[in-house]
Image (cartoon, rainbow, N blue to C red; front, side, top):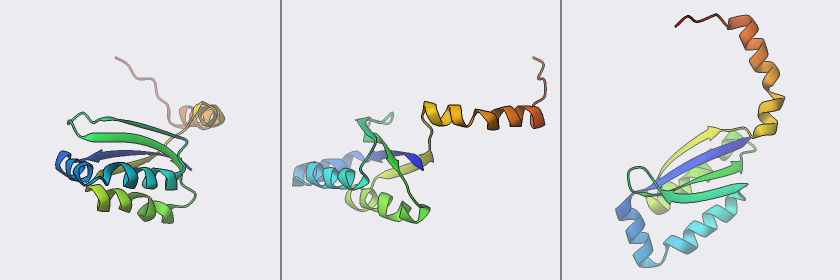
Length: 109
């Protein structure tokens, strides 16, 4: 299942890792283990180091192995959400149509 992981690393934890030289190599090792489809890094809205990583989660039992390295190495906050690409959305459009037929009601403004 394609997953989107959002990470936020508190400034002090990130600074400590950067000063010790562990930020880059440790982070790269964690990312490499995920074999991401895509990975983007930025400052979070609250000013922390952060990023978005899209990867394949084959089984939910993998969740601890995926998130624990970020918790342990950086005291990071991690969120996971299943996501679709355009092909997945097109494939799932019949589910939208079915939901509309079964549950859709006209909403007046």
